[in-house]
Length: 85
Image (cartoon, rainbow, N blue to C red; front, top):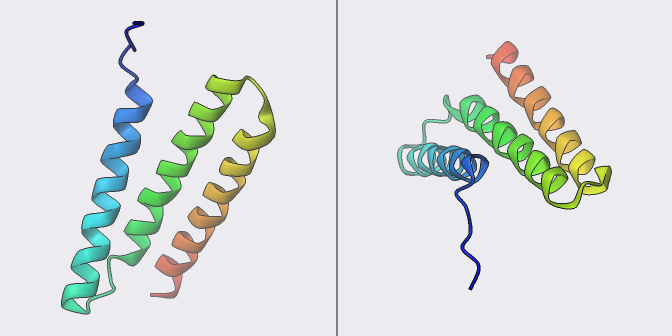
């Protein structure tokens, strides 16, 4: 059986996902949605990492560019949310 080596990008993806999940649970429980732009920034970072991992895995830009476009859109929404508040 081949041993899988440790992937630092997966670790960062999991960390960003857990923090985004914790912020969203906090917002839902308390009804305080002031941290929502921070959650969007963490989701954007998570999608950037997903795009990098897909590019690294397949060496083609099709899904990597798709995830990067999604992350830039989420980052735009987060910055717009910060500017409005």
